[in-house]
Length: 183
Image (cartoon, rainbow, N blue to C red; front, side, top):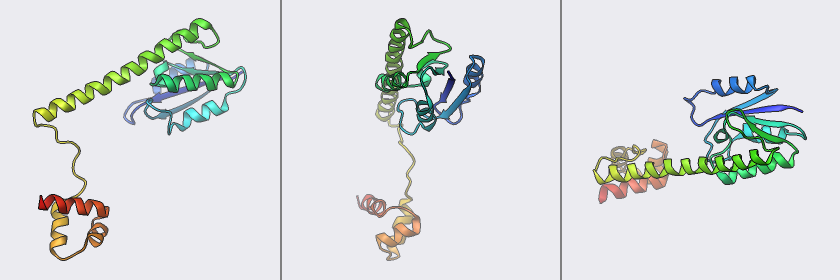
């Protein structure tokens, strides 16, 4: 039986040290960590490695369930994978142990709340953007194409393909920039 720890933070400026120390203190034999969003399992190589490594009797340990997944669907898929491998899931900071009925019930409740929190955050973000647009202060992302350079090269007689190559942008971006100057 091996206890495998999994730690995750969402952004590169966040630190994994506290989670890793907690997992070591909980007796994890092996710890895998990554800095990826928990809203999907896509691209989470450390998670996939851990799930592939699990064997009968092993324990997958996390500090909190939201470190594992922020979607109830993803969480259920992960739990099914853990169970299919004959392993169990535990959390150091929450009473989760999928080898018990009460632990599984609590896991499902926490998964619903993690997804709810993600959805609330997304709604607040969209409300903030809508408010900023209404006040005329929303700028969106910075333009990736310098329209004045496109216009200057076009005025010199260069075609869209040559402009795109010179500026390292796509030809469609050149056409959009030229349409914007005409409008």
